[in-house]
Image 1: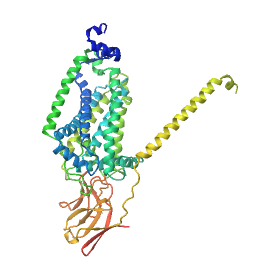
Image 2 (image 1 turned 180 degrees about the vertical axis):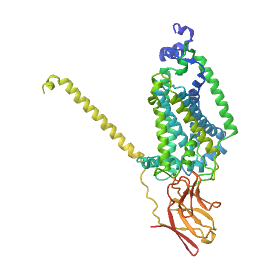
Image 3 (image 1 turned 90 degrees about the vertical axis):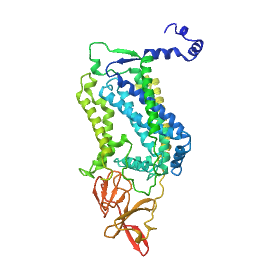
Image 4 (image 1 turned 120 degrees about the vertical axis):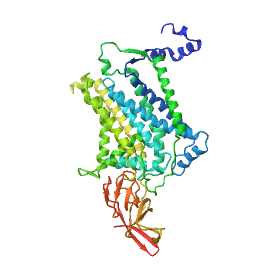
Length: 365
Length: 151
């Protein structure tokens, strides 16, 4: 960018001499996006990032009214929803953006999986992405308890009991998570700390790493496109791709605003440890496939308690997902790998089928 | 020995590195130990109550019904069978800790979370629960219901 200083104003030059704007400009101009029939999937990561920023912003706003204790949490949200001007809006935005973020994250992850973008040298990008998925689910799980309502209370009882059921380390981890032997106000305070401080710090660091790696390696071109003879077309990131991405962001914001306005977040009844779990109790949709699987498992499988088999199964499944770049040797060598394509499709079908079953199954049989 | 004399520099360097590494580990452990102890919640004394007297009169408990009551700091369920017998169990589902309820239509104890069924002896008869509910002993003394842990 020779002669860049002449093209910009005095302020730009002043700042450039002190901050080094020219380097940033160079970096922005260097980035290019490959154009092919799968380019659409490149927008999902940025979309997830926008929704994360949305969560941080609305989350900070909710902090101004929320009180993290068993005695006051439910009432403080009642106050927020009923008395605070636009309190309902910011809470609904937070609840809906959380769901949309997990949805776009899933779509992003599975598109990366099926397009084999995890192949060398992008393994660490994949690891950090799977870890971010874990954090996003952790955000969902801990945030769900904070209103301290009936659904949240039992969902947390089940979720923490699942942790406690893990062999060997389980009981210790369960206690650590609950802040005691039962789900109480101590659990609420602990989940609050995890939700608003520990997870955001970890997520910010991991997103930083993830973005750095995406920047370092550039966008992955799917093997099927890469194998063609003609050279892949490219578009500049600034402004061509960025402007398109912004259109996507505006659509996402419009969808989010409509959802928050027409389907505001509900509060339900305050948690009472001495009431039975209500019929029709369900977790958030992204835990539904696991929840439904646990329902179908018999009490004992080969002499082991059914839920332990299920929990170990999900643990191994997650570990397998994380290690896919190391296990898929054919893709790493640049050969077609149908097996892993089918594994990816099987995972998606399994999750979709059990989620649908979870919503269709009668609550009382 | 000869080597040692020949390379005093490298052996001195090795010692300093070793010493520095050890100090690093010691520093790390001295920070991690209090942190890990801090994160583990202290043990709170459990309610040791072995007996509880309910504020419900035996006559008010209808046949084929059940209700939750407090046993110490845990929920328990009082059931009157269709035959008229009073029974009590822990209300904590043995599957994943949800609180169970009485299903009048099935005359069974039922957990809404993962569709677990128990019969009126507290035995797990359908769905995922792996063990029966803990049973308590119920005594109706005049106008009082007293529940105690079976020993």
